[in-house]
Image 1: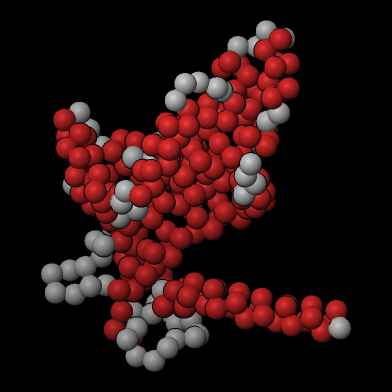
Image 2: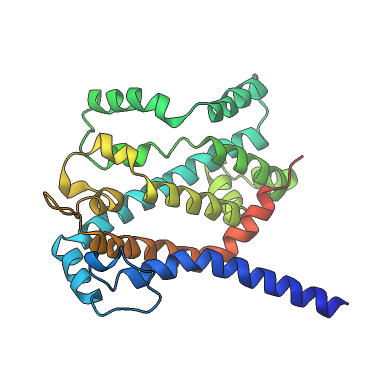
Length: 271
């Protein structure tokens, strides 16, 4: 009975995996055809036009846009994860007046759509003369309500109060304790927030669309929209560029996936 159940579960997981991976496979196949052949029948076998599409993509300096996205997303993810960790540490391990009220205010921002505050954010960036730089695309991800909540729950269970007390008795400053004691203990949760923020930043389209007009600063999503002429859209080149934009995410997740899974597990425990 157990063998039959395991076989059924394995077959079901295989079907779900195939359904999830098929769009990626289809994108890889479509990148090997010219645009005029993409709107016929479904293509399951690779064509011979991949290097032409790749040449078109590289001719438009797509490597530069990949570098832009990497700089933006890595900076945003590191900053967002670090700020979330510091705020979560304060909420989880410090007692101060109005803590519950402040936490409630922070959590209430989850109810506000990002688009509502976007106009004010754009005006603020212009007042600070930061438009047409990477900073508006990076600073937006530093305040992360979900990250604060996640780190608060993780720190409650991952960092014993006795360990912090022992570090203070040994003469450690609060900054030293945070860097040398707290951060190593919550590495999985930190990397989880890093990956989620990196993904949101990498895939972001609306924010760079309204804050960056200098083509040299475009991230990948805006760069993909550039593969069009006056009367024709080069869909094959766009698909090839999209495929290249997905590769860094797959590489990053494959390297950090074990931390991601354990981070989700630790963050799901609530007091």
